[in-house]
Each structure stands twice: as C-alpha cells, then as structure tokens.
Image (cartoon, rainbow, N blue to C red; front, side, top):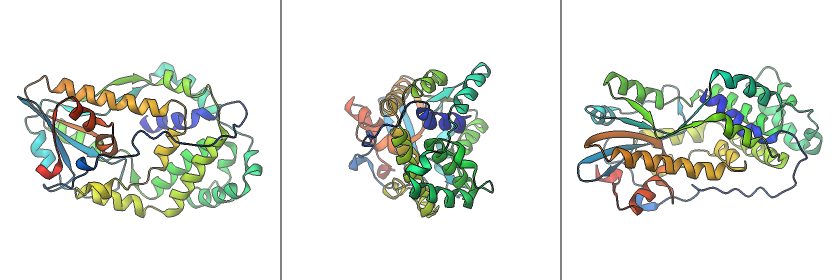
Length: 315
C-alpha cells in the first residue's frame, strides 16, 4: 500500500490540462544538512542520535530509503535499546480504506496518455525505451502513461531487478520490536485521499519530463551508488550514507505542495518525539536519515527547543 500510495502521489499531478513550459526549480527543504549532526557512529552498526530530558531518553536511528536484499547490518545496539523500551516511534503514515479503492483506481486510470510527448522529446523517449526494455519484457508498456508515471514505474522496476527493497530495514526493526513486545506507533496518521486529490488539480508535463530525465540518469548509473550508500548506512558512516541517490525524492518535490508536506512531516516527527519525552524511561524512534540531520530538520528543531541532542559520536 505504501508503494501504491507513493506512486499515485508522484504521478497524480500529470492529470489533465496543458503542459506548462516552466523552469523546474526544486524547493528542497532537506537540501542542506547540519554538519555538526553528520557524525559517524562510535558503536557498531547504523548511526544513532539521542534525544533526552531529565528522565527520558529516546534513541533515534536514521533510516535509508531502501536496502539491498540480504544487506547485513549489526543489530546488537538496536536489540539492546529495544529491550525495556516503552515505544517504537515510526514515521508518519497515510491511510486509505477499502472505500477509497474506486477513487484511487479512477485516479490511476486518468494517468493514461496518448504518447504525444515522445515526439516533443525524442531523445528522452529513446532513452526511456532502452531502459524500459532492460527491466520489462513488455517493451512498449510505458507508452500509454504520462511521463511522471513512467518515471515512477521505471524506478520501481529497476529497483526490483536490482533487488533493492523499500520495505527494509523497517520490516526487520518492527519484527524485532514485536518480539520484545514493544508497541510501534507512527508519529502521525494522515488520510491519503485528500492529499492525492489535491495533487491532481494542477498539471505540469514539464515536471514529468524533468522527473523522467532524472530517473533515467539514476537507472543508467546502475545500483552501485545505492548499494554503496546502504553499506555506509550499515556501518554508521553517515556522510557517505547521505550520498544515496535522491531521484525519486526530487520527483516528489517537483509537485506543488510536496515541499510543504515534507516540512509538515518533520513537524509531525518533532511532535512525536516531544510527546515521548513526557513519559519516563527510554524509547526508540526510526526516521529518514536526511530528515533527521537536515537544516530545519527533526534534530535541528529539537535543539532549537532547548532539548538535548547527542550525536552518534557520543556512543
């Protein structure tokens, strides 16, 4: 469901209207990081930050966007910190119910395209054909979709072929929490459909073509950069982990309102951590790595509130 909702979120903006010839400047609220927070881990395994007040400590792990299948990483620190934890705080989620399925299917259907854009961007179309054929036997399947949705599907197919999993390491962490009877809860819960419907009110073929171009750059570069970043994450080398490809995220940021949405998600995570500090004891939180250490990100905002934040270099 997460992948499907993400797919619709990325693609919904291409519905209807004329293409807008506009510069695709990206408002990226997480472009810059706080260097003082980008510290390699002293302990084995992925990097941890600590958020604390007088009687509560929250251990916060920065998460990658995906991991290669079978990626090894040291879980001993995680397991130790889950022992006795009163909660596992996870990122905000979007929820859709069974009654939303017809609307979601209609939304997806509206992403069909006549393929006329291929004549306006023949070089990009040729690259798309080559990349699609490499990951899908239906080598003409992409031609019936709008460019932004082509990019989304191509990215997903290439990741699947390269055995890069969006579900990890989240699934493993939540499994270990359940084994220790630590209840997981999201920092916030949002309804998916209002957000998706708002994205289909505008259109930009230019955004779709920009997204497709960046996706092709990433696909053509292969999985080596993502694997290198995942290996760095597993070893707690934060700076190198932050070098993970961001093409999918940059596609999101081309859509109107998504930059503000990302800022809202950071506020959700700050609020979730602040609420946890009201309970004595210790808890664990897992949030996207870049959102943690960005300027105006989760840890930066907590420090601005006067809350103590320790880096992975403190052990």
